Image 1 (cartoon, rainbow, N blue to C red):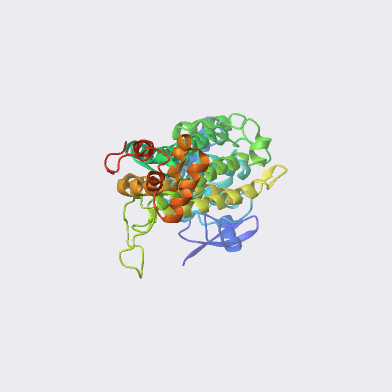
Image 2: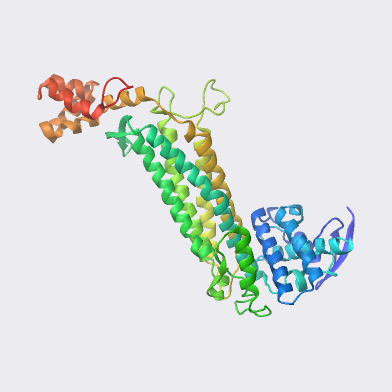
Length: 466
């Protein structure tokens, strides 16, 4: 590999010839590469947008040469477009402010801008990474702002639409199954009958409430720390800079971003990220309930509950021919577990707001954006590849219902609790149904037993539930 020599405040360093970044990024790569994990692309794009609008505003405020600003804007647009993704090489586990990645972005944009102006890649002239690309900013207000921009944009553009899709598919199944009676279950034991559609209506409502919870995080995610610079005082930035930059970002992304009401809170605390992660975790718990119920209801095909069928996507065993596993529900369960774990990491990281700065910004960014990304992809798969193809096994629903001892509950108003309990016990001991034992007992006329139980169970014809 060919190298070029660059210098920073610590001296000279060799940088790969094809790199847009410079000495500070190279030092970070050499000294702090721990995991090989870098910032997610949505976050890098968010920083690119900050730098683009910062250059535009700095020209407007007469703080930057127009030619340099236009080159910075063009380079920043390359970042937003993903054209320079391979240039963001700093490990996620770095200085807690994210300074190394802010400088990685500054250097890449400066290096690309210099190439646009001179044909020579990299360097600090005529465009300087600090004096021009980072003008009016600090890592301490840029990185927190990038977290909020990336998170809210990803939630709005990907997560919420996927959740609405899942809600719609679940509501469609609720309507399709609204007349299908089945046994209810509490404590994993047989309970009184419900409609299969009612179960699915509960799932749809869980998703709807998840949407509402996540939408509410927008109020606090929309506040950006830009303008606070190093410690929240706004040192070395124009008083109009943040407001104008944020307005440009808000217009570009159609998101209600605004300058933070208090810059000391917005840089020292990451409560909005913790709140958002909590809403994502809550939805992950909802998904766990839904995915588990679906795979249990579909268990079998002959020796399980088997009350619904789900699409068969792939062979489920390397040793058992014909076995089909609930692939999508199980994938969703694993995503939910990861999101719950991410929330723990974010919660712990949120406690690291020491005085004027939180110093675990990179790990908050990684986990928050990963949770959003995993959730919207898993939810889309659940909606399109599982829920949409669910079918009801009417015959199995009827059989399970007719066999249930819980049907004795329907007889309580007519014969009392103790006699109904005795019928249920006798049915259990003999292996007969509650209906059979009730008819044998002659505690009620045959027509009365039939009327009571048919009202609960429905017709014996599985295609004609009452």
